[in-house]
Amino acid sequence: SSNNIAAAQGGEVSSPSADVALNTGTGSTPKAGVTASATNAQPSNQQQKQQQQNKKQLSAVEIAAQQRKIRQQRQLQSSSAIKIQSLYRAYASNSALRDSQGELFDRRLSDLATLGALLTKAGSCADYVPPPATVTVLSVQLLYLTRRTKWNRRRGDLGSTTTSAGSTASSNLMLLPLDSTNMTRLAKYLTLVILPGMTADDDNMDPLLPWLDDALVGRRRVDHLLTLCMEALTGSSAVSTKEVDTTTGEAVGNLFRLVTGADREKRARAAILKYCRNKLILPRGMIDITTPGQTMDTYPGGGEGTGNLDLIRRTRTLLLYGICGGRPIPDNAERNREKCVSDRDRARADRSVSLLLDVLIGVQGKKAASVYSADLEGKLLSRFVEEILSVPLLTWKISAVTVKRLTTPAPAPGTNGVIPFVDMLRAFASQHAEELSRGGVRSILPTTDVPPTKCPALAVMCLLANAVQMGQVCVPINGSDPKRFDFRATNLFFLLMASLVDSAPIGSLSSRHSAVEWVSHGTHSTPIVLSVVVIDQCKALVIDSYVRNLFKCAIDEDIIGVDSIISDKNSKDKKYEDEMAQLGGTSA
Image (cartoon, rainbow, N blue to C red; front, side):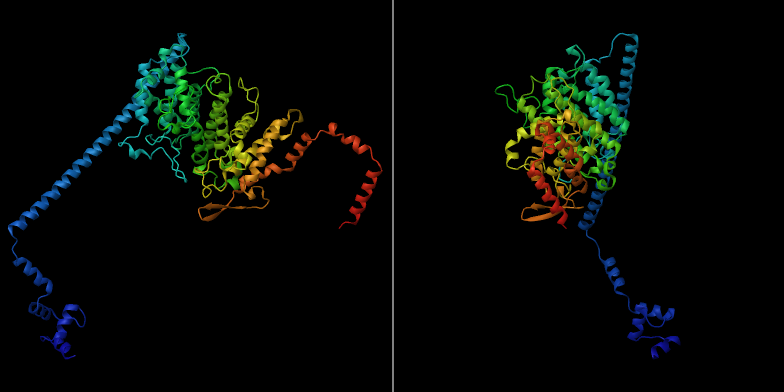
């Protein structure tokens, strides 16, 4: 254009098109003189606003407000810095205090072990018993080292696991996750400090007796100690090695057997037995009140939080969510079968179930005859069937030794050689006779903690599978030895099996590779694909060899006279045989 030609010759351009080219950067590039003259001629809007702001004068009130805002920001920054520094100093000092207390606690335990070894070597005493004052100091130290405070939050999560159903696997939310160090400390503490005084002949050396006399502080210390031991035995926050688990489990097991009367050689004092039994195996709703006028609030151990120490409930939670990665049925169960449960998980579960069996079998012994009523004994044995035998894949999660112990006569005094498995089934049938008669097995078994959407096997189906598996290895029931066959026990077993089969899903005994069960949720239903491994365990009820052994034991050939009937044939028998032969020859 003519404007572009003039710009190229060095002339001035005053047309609007030239201004657009200069401001937007489009079109041909002008010379420097042209740009400067055009810019000076017409200043931009931004420059005009800047000039207006410079001309504007701030008032004294506005200047004071700005200064006040600056001072407030500086004060906020200063207070924030002081708070951060104080929190860090508190965290660092408390962490250092906890570490120093841990080292002091370890040195004291080492000194006690050395002193006991020297006294034993010198022949002064069989076992050194620390004074009650020393026991109290060490107990307070251990509870401090394992309790959760606001200064050790970064050391790990709460010692609890929230299950898929919303239940909490851990009993106490104030406990730290138990690592190998604290687990080892607990084992040494029980072995060197607590157990010697409780088994001593002198009542004044028992540390738990003065604690129980103090209803406020002392009993709370006992509760915290029992909670710590329960967490080490069945809690999901216990993270350590298999060797440490074994050592700590043995120490905790010795304490629980002592305070529940399950130990055949030693026994705690009567006051300790009464208090700890109501904490560990007599939870809320099952308190055995033997004194007239005694209520739940006045009975020892009947306060709030009693169910947190319920050994049966905690063992069930461990079997469901404390092992196998928190899954009631592992994802690789169909592929790996029994190997889906690791050795460490099986050892933990087996240790807890064995302790529970010791306690329940001890209930049947002569020592507990004056403490437990017959009805309460039946309730405890029935609870084992309801809450433990209804755990899916139970026979895989515990050892074969424990399964054999369940299915063989108990050697404990006062049990009369009763098979624990059969006795538990008998107690279960006696406690729930009305529900079993009308086919309401499902209403008896717990289902809230194991929803079908998370565990693809109903509780009645799991109970059927576990009962079938144990019935196969129980010699008085499986018919493998006719001389040891127990007709009454077998009759009871199959009556219960008939009730369970009638209440179990149809797919429990299906020959198909998979089966579906519909679960109702209000007005709609959800299909659940049943677990293949649990179905296989249920179908063992109709296995050929098992049924054949039972028929051999059930049929007495001498009484029926099978040989004489076969050898003596009359004309009717021969005629019937001829007819059957003809029909067999003409059939397709």
